[in-house]
Image 1 (cartoon, helix red, strand yellow):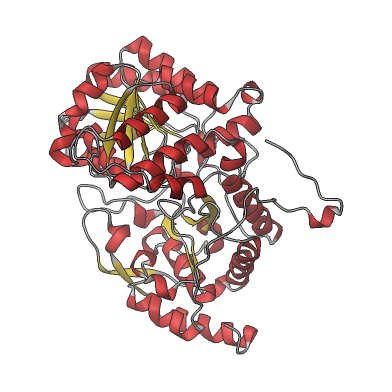
Image 2 (cartoon, helix red, strand yellow):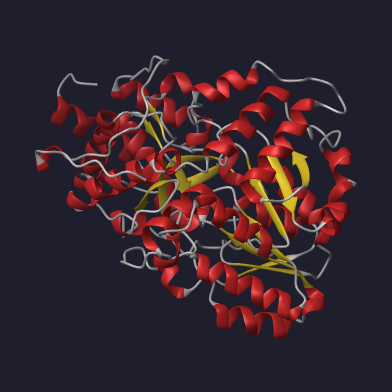
Length: 483
């Protein structure tokens, strides 16, 4: 990856290695209309309408800008139900990137998780992982399995200088396998990087150590590679062993050690869909029957063929450091801006986006008043910025109905790749700073409609008191007639 220094140091910013050729008009509502919109949405940013959002930072899944080569690839898609050349090109791209030939399609990452769970999770079984993802856990628990998190304790420290806070606690992993016994363990899953604790990466050394333990003890090793391109960037820039390795060398090494790799092409590939791959056909053969049952035929798996072509090209582009660096560099820039403002933010900067530490922004709010969701509502009111709650709302209640409090109360501000300009990133940082300076106004939320499963997607809450109206009054006092 090249390094471009500015002659005037004060002008140093991340330099995009692409140009914008298609634009989409945005809308910024007046603050009073933003208040109405978030309340109509039940204080759930997922239920906001796109027309009411200025910066959509809820996710980087399926909303990244595609390259010109991806758009061009879509025009040659072969829509044959079986024996499609599009599928052959997708398999060729996966072979180039990962060095494997055993591939199953799925319509997105959580569909791959469903297939994995159906094949390997049994009642009373245990899945060990550095940290859970919401849908991963839901698929395991609905089949009677249990999730045990073994992230190293450094991963739960919001601010530190550790470069790989997503690492497994290897001692705890060894102990857990012995205590539960290999027969009870569905699989050991590494998420690279860890979505719910700030997009923090896992080192190559740690991943290979996990697979060595799994192989020694006869346990299946699984890599969730949805965020792998960010993780590879961090390996290349933070891990001495990887500095002079080619990106493809890292991908191939991981694929040769893990039994199963799955990923969402909405993230890795910047398109749509998902894939499950393995260097050993016995694993894909064991999962194969579930693809036509839940997804579609084995050469499309519920994916639209143009998306498969775009994903194949996107995978090839994920080998290019100029391609994969833009997201982490923009995120690092946003994190530095927020940190310079004094805003509590997860450090070091990870993948996915910037993560506000809401437990420190509103320390008086208890977990059961949902601090991260409250800060998310406040930020939307302040700037039309839609973030995503990654705290207690994103957990699910215990079987006895008690609330499971999150380890961290985070508001994720995702940075879709090649979508926002630096001025928009600076606008986001400015509005977060205003929320931080007016944090005493922010109050809690309470449920009005709480679904039993994945409540963060479509549950509804209301403000406790009238703090949101007070926030609007303060906005008008500070900004006058500005939007």
